[in-house]
Length: 384
Image (cartoon, rainbow, N blue to C red; front, top):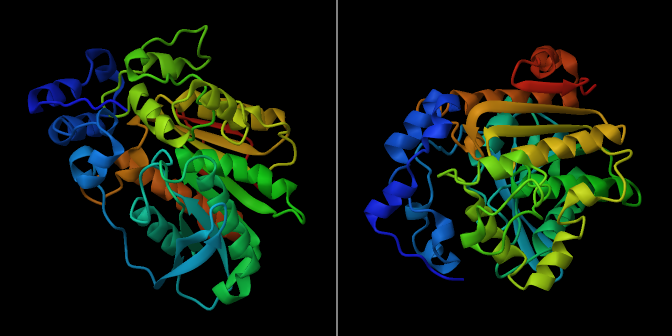
């Protein structure tokens, strides 16, 4: 991949918020990005090797934190195959006797970035607030491990935890899965795997956070990132938000180029595979209850909501919530003092929802009336 070298002046210019977006932006996000994001160099403008040498220079992490203390944290090594090896899963356990319900988290990062630190604050908070075990999966990353290694690492982790439920002090009949962005994409696919496995794995919930469910529109070349039209892309958000400074369409292209390669025929084949593009799944019937989170200022917003419609048409129980005014990665900025109110709202929503689906409505006041739909929340029946 070509490398683009930026001066500090040009980086700042690229990070300026286009005037057309200013009226609708969440005031907290606008202030945070203006004050702390203007000097961040986009990872999609360099090679992965350059990023790995100095990730802090290319990551906007100012408001993030490590999360609260939890009763117990330990790592387990899960054997995986194709290629053979081991992945680390970090297990967060609440206080109490157990056995506990459990949730597996698949972190975001475009199948290229991220790890056990990415969503530690979310995992720790959910563990404490929902009284469930949270298993954070450190799947293997591209380009060393391209598609579909990450997907099958996560599926192996699900099966392994179910099989070893007794030793982990968890309930094999009270399991949920979820993830952010690329993790949301894998969550969508794994819900199909769980339904079709023998015997089926009965999921309490599939939680998809700003999921990438259809990336067929993403251009191979960054220079073509603004070439989308209604004829080439069915998702208005991908067209109208392509030049966002914090998560432009070019960033998605960068991730895909490492995950599925740059050969046009190979990309076409992989993107036609429903395991990469879950909107193409052969059947949407009898899937686990779903909750889909989207962000207003996110290229992937409309594909995530479209996937929710496919689930509804398939007869499944689905709720969706669009958080207004915020970017794709808003869920990460949940620092108690310096973060976004919308991120902390999402954290509360997640904890209440997971508590209710695993323990029952009484434990969380019916999850605050099932994430009470508002002008920014679209709901299609509560998850009972």
